[in-house]
Length: 231
Image (cartoon, rainbow, N blue to C red; front, side, top):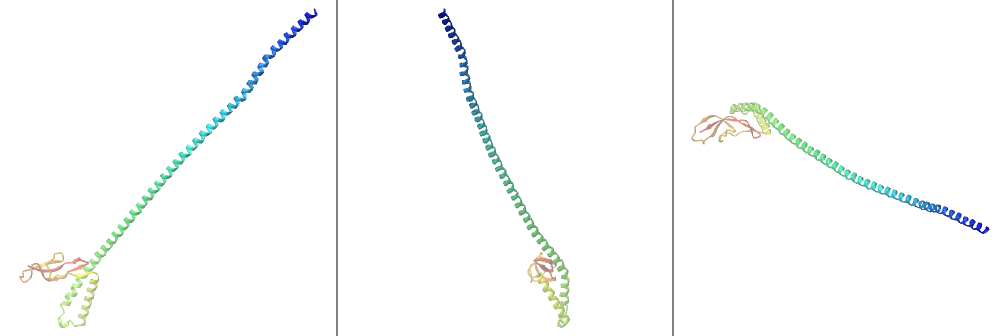
């Protein structure tokens, strides 16, 4: 009896031991699985962190490239803007230079035109004055020509002759000169024919007599000579 009891106790102990072992094996499996999962979690986290870091580096690299391209584009724009400004500046300078040249040319033309007008006005005024003085010269010549030979030594006549000569010298200095007429061929530009005579001894179209003396002022006729023409 005792032996059977011992066997039963031993068998029960073995069964309990087997049950115990059977109950611990799943726990051990769970521990291994937990350990594996515990080992896999840091690796997954590391991979995730590495991926995030790679994405950040990629984004940073892309951002730097975009910034570099933007700077390059801005540099190109600033270069073209600067060049455009320089072109506008050069164009403005050229326009101002052209305007100054035109103004200088206009001023030069104005000055030349003014000088010509002043000279012309002076000549017109001088011609008017000289033309009004010619009758005085004519009267001096007529008066001196009417003096008899025996009275030419009279102080009054000598004084009149000196005044006449002084007047003619002054007119000559101003550019006034008498027109040659007697013995010259008739020229309608200088002579005014008031009489015509036939004379075989004289040449054709020759001036034989002068009734009124003509005068030039700087190669311009102030008064034509009044003459008689032969043939």
